[in-house]
Length: 159
Image 1 (cartoon, rainbow, N blue to C red):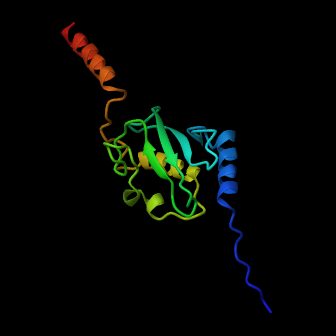
Image 2 (image 1 turned 180 degrees about the vertical axis):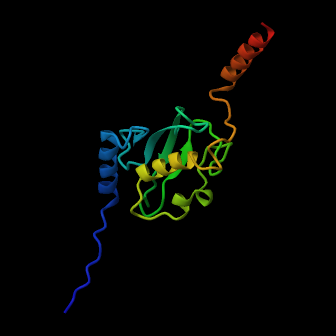
Image 3 (image 1 turned 120 degrees about the vertical axis):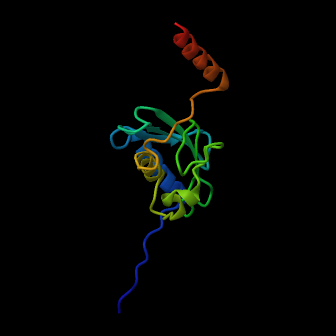
C-alpha cells in the first residue's frame, strides 16, 4: 500500500530566519541585498532591501532603497514592496513607490517558494526590460536638493 507524502511546510518564523541568514551573508554579485528593518520586530515583518541598478540602463549604478513588509500570512501571500528611492517603472506607482502586484508578475502569481531575494532580483531584472531600461527617471532627493540642483544648472548655462 502506497502512502502519499505531503511536502513539509516550514513555519513562517523559521522561513524568515532562513531568509535573514541568507540576506546577512550576501547574495549573488552583491547588487541586491536585504535584511531586517527593525531588530526588535519579533514578528519579522519589516525589512529593507537595496538594488544597485543594472548596467546599460538609466538605472546603472544607482542605489535604490526599498521597504518590504511581510504580514503574518507570508509566505502564503507576497510581501508588500515599496521603493523608498524615487523610480519610474511600469510596475511601480510613481507617487507612492508601491510595486503594484497586478503589474508585477512575481507578486501577481505568487508562490510560497518565492523569497524576498527572488522579488528583489526580479525587480532588478525588470529594470533591464525594454519597457523600463530607458524610461525617464525622476530627480532624487527632497525638494530643497532639487531646487539647489536646478540653480547649479542655471549658473552653468549663464557662464
